[in-house]
Amino acid sequence: MSTRYDCRDPFSRTAGIDAAVTAARAGELIVLPTDTVYGIGADAFIPAAVTTMLAAKGRGRNMPPPVLVGTARAAAALVDDLGAFGQDLIDEFWPGALTLVFRASPTLLWDLGDTKGTVALRMPLHSVALDVLKQTGPLAVSSANRHGQPSAINADEAEQQLGEAVSVYLDGGPCLDNVPSTILDLTGTIPKVLRSGAVSVDRLRAVSSILAENEHYPEEPADVKPAEPHPLETGPVDPATGEPPSVA
Image (cartoon, rainbow, N blue to C red; front, side, top):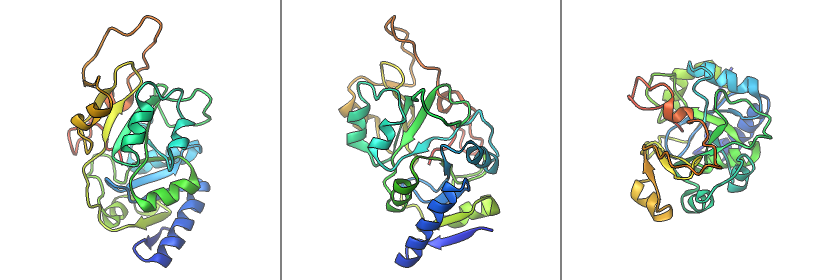
């Protein structure tokens, strides 16, 4: 049975965050507000929970979810290397609406789906989400909607689409800015924009002067093996938007 908490009320917020943390640790699904759209989340290190989340959305393993973190330190522990620009981009834009794709650390004991050895990470600029993430650790989070339907910008829309598949709904009110996050691929030597979003290319170039906008640069150094393209770049298109899958 699902439980919903109004996080605009201080007492309900505290109870809701505690319930969400408990549910996530138990391998159950939660819905939480972010600074872009509402997200459905599961413990990133419980494969069965991630599988359940994908099923609740109507997705398969070929559309793995991004991972939200509560601190930059948590992100660094999940990647093989931040690369030449990763730390500077994190310092400038996190928490915020920038999703960064890295090569995942090969030591991680998780299964997010067919990630091709990469992981998409973001630290959201939303106090409720951060309070949850700082207690749960990394969560696999995707937009709180059924595949092919519009992303939920309030708890009502999320609950209408996901129903009893979710144990805890955290209602933070409507999303004020529902522009999706910008997705930047850092798995190669040249950062590449996979999806335009809330963080403009001009702002990115202020930190990373070398930037590709969905272009392919064949001149990789001979001693560097590029990662396989992340599914956010090459995966199926969302029928509702005509774009790659939504990222919370």
